Image (cartoon, rainbow, N blue to C red; front, side):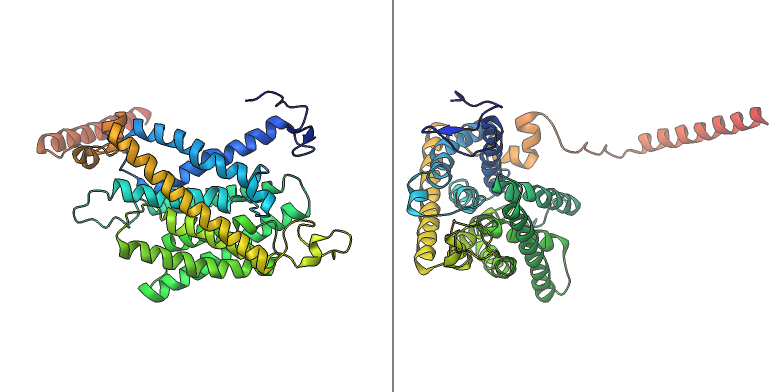
Length: 372
């Protein structure tokens, strides 16, 4: 519970401060942000395919059986942390759990009903750009804040996030330009998120040159996964698996190969150029550990989510009725609509509108003559 969590003392574990210098309540609130955003990432994959009541039950149970164990195992001093697995800001804990759970959910709930429209065409391109800008801004808190202090590690995490996101943004734009004959804003935005997701587990552990390389590899791998998803016929509304799931997977594995060299693990002999003294260093063994943890997380998240949704579907139907989806889930589930439907055109309404406009002109003319 919240016993011993307050604004005056750090969070304690076995008589020692878990994070010294940060009030326990602040640390709990910050970790709560990760817990909230992870199921939100997953939710984007199965838009228009969940009834609201089973959705609420699902994410509550999912947080307990999928997110919480991995959060403890990797960040809370669990067996993976003791084994030597590192994850700076959530490549494993957030992105792999959400991405591969999203993939499992797509297997269970299937596709959105579609007539002739292309489901990969965005609803509103300016909203895509606005959302990307908000995410990018927030990612500085997401990654930079995971240093849990001001200083060099926070600076490295923020700058590395900017580098990887920018590189992936530009390369994704180029690929779309070459394939489609024109640059597109949506692809640019997807590329930025792919770079940011992939650098997340490594942001505070690698040099800027490694962030640049991660941005390149993020573009290649995530773009390929998004195309594979289309060919396999999965209706992932926000490419959660291809961008977040595989981005977090690739970044977590690359961390074992791109972290600082071995001398950075020993503060007494470490050069000043080291990013995060006394933490992870690159080696074949570390690469294998990161790969094993990423694979285990991917399989665990997929299987547990699949079983959970199948079990829930026996008790209560997950999918809404197709007629409600076509009509609008906003309306059928919540009695609200995002946009006011346009009124039907009738000659009588048009004549009344014209008469009102003519009357307004006469009123304005009369006011002018009075003034004169």
